[in-house]
Length: 371
Length: 107
Ligand SMILES: Cc1cc2nc3c(=O)[nH]c(=O)nc-3n(C[C@H](O)[C@H](O)[C@H](O)COP(=O)(O)OP(=O)(O)OC[C@H]3O[C@@H](n4cnc5c(N)ncnc54)[C@H](O)[C@@H]3O)c2cc1C
Ligand code: FES
Image (tube, rainbow over all chains, first blue to last red; front, side, top):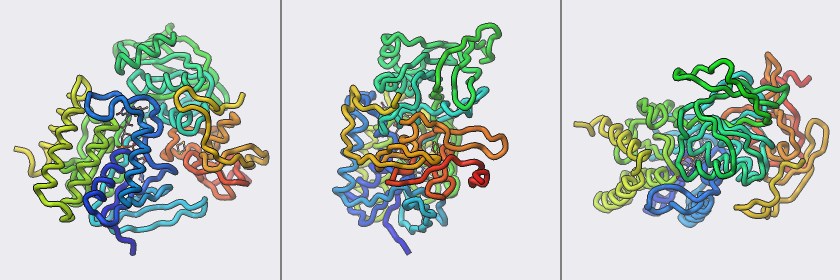
């Protein structure tokens, strides 16, 4: 039987931080599994300098943070299994892992863990319109992975749906990669993301059609043209306002939602929160769920940013090490206090504060925590 | 037009040192880099259809890029349902467009 002190699911910033922190504090066998063929989660797509408040990390590129974390993981003896998907959690301590080895039939390994951290991140929301399944329609994150990680263009002429930070940043990066961004299409009356990112797009002369949506992807076996239209207050297309844009690719940046399937299987309780992007696991200030010994961190607990994911991961790592008896309560308390101080600092500003409130309300509702 | 990004304004020149090998896609050889996702090698050659659906025989291609949606599944070295966006290239791989769920439409 395979046994580990701690099994972390997901090797993004949250999962890696949890593993590194626990290993630093003396956890002997820390295993991180990730279904992808590379560790780092979303970090390696992010070749731009990070936004964020004055706290650490802003001004640094995601790829550099990722490289540092991988070096730390190695230094502290964290074990990483790639191409390995966690497919179930049983009895609060067995993690079923499906490992793909050189295209042979996947091997299923059950790992018994003293503590489990779920840091599986978020998935992109899908917007449906006529022709949305055609090759050439893809998530903005998929396009970003192709250009920044795999160095290959997903198409030549792109229409981006959504003007939040992801839509703006990926549009700009597509241009940096040599693609032509034909237009951004946004349903709301104003641009969703930060002004700094929007002005880069505008300076490049790319139109942002606000109060518009995509109504059809035209073409045979791939996208050849995109029909957009203005929408009314109820988001219904207004007849006669249709425009046809010539493009071979549509990228969707309509927000992210926390991945919750593994949490569901673990029997930890979930709660719905619109601000945080969907169904999220209930957790306390230690990031522990209602299933004792199972912790959560990062976008899986509510969609935020890489820095908050990283700090939440550290919290989970410290708390797990504490409950394994590796650090004293007072030492752990001190560490957790510092992390919370940084987390509160990161959750400032108009977007951050909303999330801080949502998180605080969520934690206050945790069984045994609330008034 | 080759879709590869040789020189990038932020991340610089391609310098991974990955060996370029040949893989066979639907019977035709294409160049690919060892370790890159199969899907990337296909995109580089403008091949964007990975599979066709069972009922309506509609084409599917890259959608999530991180192994979650299965739209990019193909038959790789005889095995169906291999997600090409998260499966690294190896020398001499044989890759085929998949028809149907288990490739039963491939005949
Ligand atoms: C386009 C874009 C731009 C962004 N820009 C910024 C920015 O400028 N600044 C900033 O702070 N943040 C930014 N972010 C957000 C940031 O990337 C995320 O908040 C952060 O990566 C979340 O970290 P995470 O560890 O929770 O999840 P992820 O980084 O998503 O990692 C989760 C990992 O879990 C793995 N996984 C999922 N399910 C399983 C399973 N069942 N078994 C095994 N492994 C699994 C995945 O493969 C993945 O590697 C951006 C995000 C996007 C999409
Ligand atoms: S594109 Fe979604 S699994 Fe490969």
